[in-house]
Amino acid sequence: MNDFYLFFVTGIEHITDLNGVDHILFVAALCLRYLAKDWRKLLVLITAFTIGHSITLALSTLNFIHFSRNWTEFLIAVTIVITALNNLSVKSFEFKSKYPLIYVYALLFGLIHGMGFSTLLKSMLGRDQTIVVQLLAFNLGL
Image (cartoon, rainbow, N blue to C red; front, side):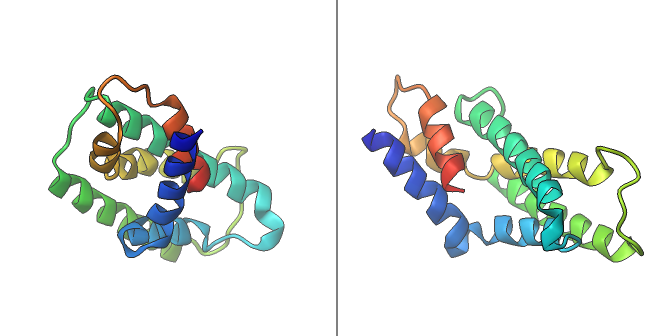
């Protein structure tokens, strides 16, 4: 349970300290269109981002995929700009389908953001440790 707490707190710190400002900016850009009454849509949106984030975080931590940190940080900034520009291009915010394109953006951009944290996660894990509990705790902290 000690590992769970450590990774939970790390998730909280990742989103609240200045190192997590990219995630805060991205999530803020994603959520700008929504009102409080749209909480279900927001929940789907944030869940899509978290799923994408978790997939690449796990794959990168387990060394199935690898991207340089410079490229990852650059692509994270690109996702923020694309999301902000997309917000500017929307004149009236209406869903015309059950799963609008913004949900796909959140999932795909979550894939990019997930690669940014894997270096720290790798350094925190033991050599033979599985990452299921740690990943769950980290995402709950987020």
